[in-house]
Image (cartoon, rainbow, N blue to C red; front, side, top):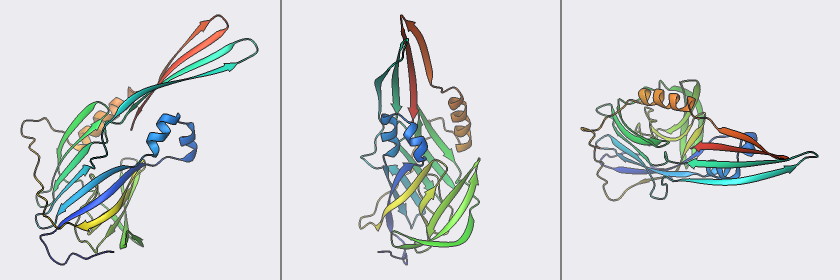
Length: 255
């Protein structure tokens, strides 16, 4: 199944699936609508121009932003009163559409993604992951892969890469290993390659033009998102109507 790059001028296509990492206990606690979204896998394509040292990671045409609201009601009868809980769930998936353009020769990364309703346009150098290589190996999609680990923030990241394809590319913001990254596990998400092939037709990877757009670095975006998360809370209002206790709560879910 695998092949080793022996000549340059090739364009590689690597298809990845992204999905959330969540415990079974936590999954059971979530409303059905949110649980279904958390279990879905999103598909992305990585194009690598081996000759020019460029890569472009973008969502598959079937992975699109979406959002919806839904409500459900639960009524419980007690001896002295009735408790009615109406829950409104707001599901916001506006971070499924994104792209990451990388120029490995110039140490440059341009990217765009949503967080909630806010679109972030970024320009940064390639992230220095300070990967720690290990002696562990395993086979992924027919390739012998080696394990590497890194620490970012308060979480550990695990990557599996293959030296059979000696390019330092990988999904999303991940790269910097002596071979193509086929898997990344983070505290909350995992990225798994499901297809690797050499394209017959050359793909032209064009650099996005951000000259007239305000851009942020990854660290600046992380700081902004942290502040938004602090202000993002579920809310509830409880009222009394005769012998009925009525609680209306809102759960906001941003994937």
